Length: 228
Image (cartoon, rainbow, N blue to C red):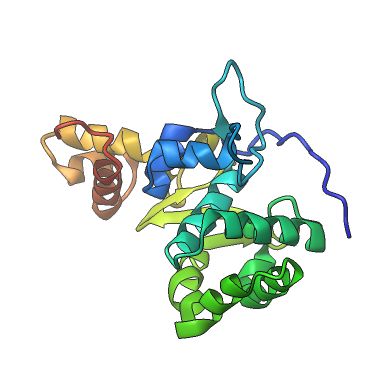
C-alpha cells in the first residue's frame, strides 16, 4: 500500500474556521469540530491540513469538500465510524491524502467506495451504498457541483449556490460571485444599504442584478445578515 505523508497546504488552499465551514455545510459547528478534533473517547474522522493554533482549528478547501462528502454519506444513514474506516482505506489503497476530493470519486466513485469497503470488510456500508441507487441519488448530484483540476485530479471549485462559488485561489476561498473576485457578503451588504435595489449595486460592481440577488440570498441563508 502507498504511504501518505503530511504536506502543509500551499498558499491558496483556503482557510475556514469551524463555525464558518459548518455554515457552508449546514451542520452544527460542534459536530464538524468532532470530525477533526480527537478526544479521549474516539479518533477524529479527518486530519485537518492546518495545525491548530492556540486550540483553534481551521480547515482547508480540501477538508471542506471531504466534509461535505461525509455529510452526504451521513444522509444515507452511514455512520461516521464507517465513513472514517472507508476513508482511511481509500487513502491507503489509492495514495490520496484527500480521497473524497479526487476526480476519481466523480468518475468512478461507487466502485472506489465498494473496493474500499470490501478492504475493511464493511458489508453494511456496501449494502447501504448499493441498494435503492443511493450513490446516484444522493452523492452524485453534489459531486456534479464540484469543478476539478484535471492536471492534478483534485477538487478545484465548489458551486455552492446559484451564481456563487468557493474557490480557494480567489479571495482567500470565501464565497464569491462566479466569474468575479467580488465577495457575496460585500454585494449583500451593499444591496441592503441601497434599499434592496439590485440594479444600483449591479452597476456599482459591474455584475448582473441576478448575481446581486444570488449574493443576498446566499448570505441570508448562511445567517450572515442579522435581521436583514
